[in-house]
Length: 256
Image (cartoon, rainbow, N blue to C red):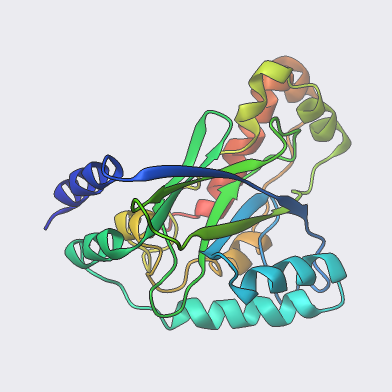
């Protein structure tokens, strides 16, 4: 089965399912020791998704809020969890999608950030990394849209972790001045990552090996800030778009 066939079959599967919508809480993250480990890189909002009631989601919330080193330990556990996963074929990914009682679309306002997301059958937990420029969010939450087999009792849950990007005073002032009707530009879907990922399986099944944790490299890579004169020339909205594209490039780090 090739990629286009799998995508078409996955789209057909959407039409056979009921919808269930719930808000995804966004919690702010200040790493306790960035040199040792990160739950999510700067300039991103990472959505962690698992089966409803999965203990790891509460552990993520506690690690982010406590700030006592638990985030470093948990980041290492998640890194090892993802590193143990293997790539699957398009056909296998589609079969897993069909067998899942629920899979999800993640939305921010009218923008779709990810589709066909569900936990690994064996290990649970999916992680969706979304570039973020540090600006205001409206709405102030994401939406988990579940595509559920009619009559199924099970469900999914998610929590989003926001790590603010480093911004100069001029950059911060620019993103704060983005008009209310353009705030969707402050958060976007992630670009392609390292070649250990396959774009389709990442989007469809979230069970390839080593997602995040490309993030340690991304956290170490920095670009020069936008000069104040360039911000003045571009204006707030265009500057915010430029900053978002910079975050996407840093997080996507295409090695081609």
